[in-house]
Image (tube, rainbow, N blue to C red; front, side, top):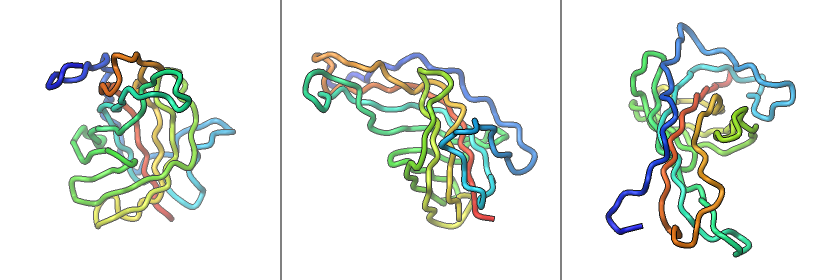
Length: 177
């Protein structure tokens, strides 16, 4: 990669359509053995469409025999059911609303995406900060993912290069009853 030249972009997946929503979202229909079901004591309160990129860097793999694209962070916009920009999703499974409220998440479960070349579906346990839309949110599901996965390997000449892979997803936020 030449210094000062932006990293190549992978082809973009289709943009996430605005989410039709008249009231609180419903729990998604997940398989019987899904590991990303939200606990029964929480209710879905907000559904957001995300579109952006997953950022990877070419690094030597753990056993030292080759090179892989290693995940660094996501950069995504979050939009409500009307298509309005309401926040951003970033490093450390963070979510920040335009009202200043924030979430930091930890993965507690995942399922493979139905499309093998798309990001896993996740269940995150979250800690909320600040007052606003994300206040008291304790779980977030990432579902309906499209894209976001790099090629498995990279080459020696790509070491330290950055790859930005477009993705879209739906995030469902939950609060205690």
